[in-house]
Amino acid sequence: MQFENKERCIIISGSPEFQDVEMMDTDYVIACDDGLSHCLNHAIKPSLVVGDFDSYQGVVPDDIEQVRVKAEKDDTDTMLASKIALEKGYKHIILLGALGGRLDHTIANLSTAAFIAEQQGICELIGENECIYMVRNSVVKIERNGFRYISVFSYSESVIVTYEGLKYPLQKKTLCNEFPLGVSNEFCEDLAVIKAESGTACIVCTKKGR
Image 1 (cartoon, rainbow, N blue to C red):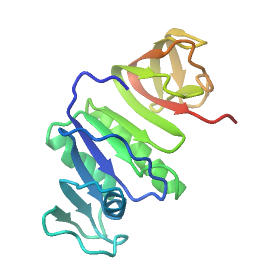
Image 2 (image 1 turned 30 degrees about the vertical axis):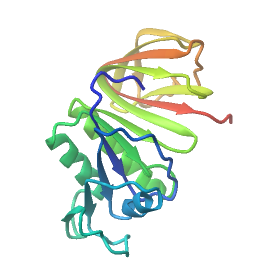
Image 3 (image 1 turned 90 degrees about the horizontal axis):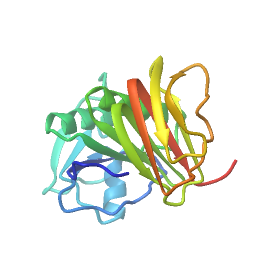
Image 4 (image 1 turned 120 degrees about the vertical axis):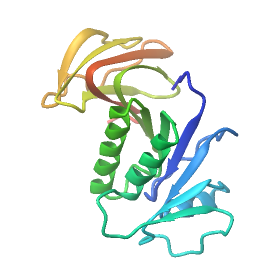
């Protein structure tokens, strides 16, 4: 995805599905609980590790800052990390290790992404075969990059969307969360431009068919 602000916060959660991405020197990396295992397995050094540590059973390196919280809490570890990222001023947040595994955790991570969008941020959830973008009152530019399908859903009650570069373009069309009108669109150009107004759009890019 093309994003004007190059400063990103990458949050690594503990889902068994993990897709590594190319890191930049300016990235601020937060590991959530067992997300630290992904970091250690992929030679990623987080700036911070947060969580109740009910999943990660190893030793946290001494040179990594920690935020430890009780297991009895309202925020998931990923939500806690997202709030920290927003407090630090990051508006482009990438969630890794946040898809696959337990469905309830995946839904919770989508809700976290929607919260980020509500705070004027843009969130990407990157998995092995799909990328999900949560966007509110903003414009995103998404490269084809091997994706076969692109679907746009309303994550709020409704959202007004305009998109270009897709087989089925829309111009200020209202999508509702009870009808999946925007499913299974396709790229017809190398770059798609999607604008979401008056609501939150969940954009799902998929590499595989079916």
